Image (tube, rainbow, N blue to C red; front, side, top):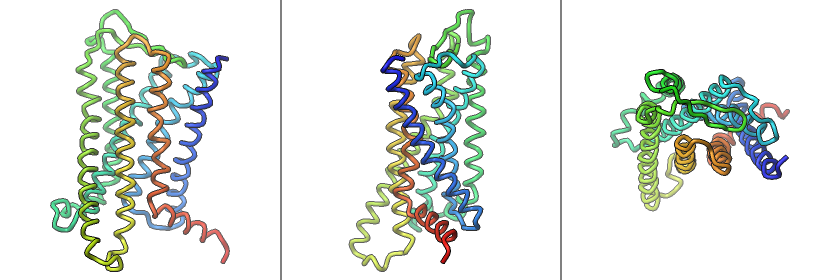
Length: 307
């Protein structure tokens, strides 16, 4: 086995293992908290949706690429290859839209009472779960549409283009119109990134305004909900910055892989590593910043520990 392939296998195995550990921990924590009768916040439904998307990003593509670097080559047929890419693209887009939903929901949550967003505070919670379901349905549909468009005879000629990914090979038409890709696939992602950047800038503005007010008010007079909401806002801002950074790099690498006839030796593992970074990092950002996670752990531990 090539020493470089062995090193890459170890790196990807460690990355996937850490990501699965963090996401499964949060998923089990939320599930146990719900089953034991503890109340969950509305934002926790969005966190759960993000965790599920993270798991689906890591598993469908992470395991095959690790097996490839361990020596198993081209073990997936074309149908399996397309299915892997379909699930990965759907999960990646749902992860993006869920992070966008998080930032928007937090803008509504911490907006002052005299803000235009305050009118939505009472209405927003009941749309959280439908919004999460809509994200999955929407991206399942547009990715299926993209898959069908790429293999539709109207958008291709007799020439076929192959991308060799190591664990499988996927084909596509050489005459595929990139504008179709931009309209039905890239445009919603770009819009989500734009909303995330705007929401993060607005959250930073609100935090700065809050900091100025605190300088004139004694901390004991603050609402007990203020600190948890601020820490949750910090977590969401950090998540958005992390996602946008890795998403931008991954998108550039994905475009290069789409444009060139084949992935370069350094381009494929680098793109795969970048695509998995956010699903690996995000659960630990949440665990570190969200004090409610600590409370859930404490409540579950006290319930199991005899007094």
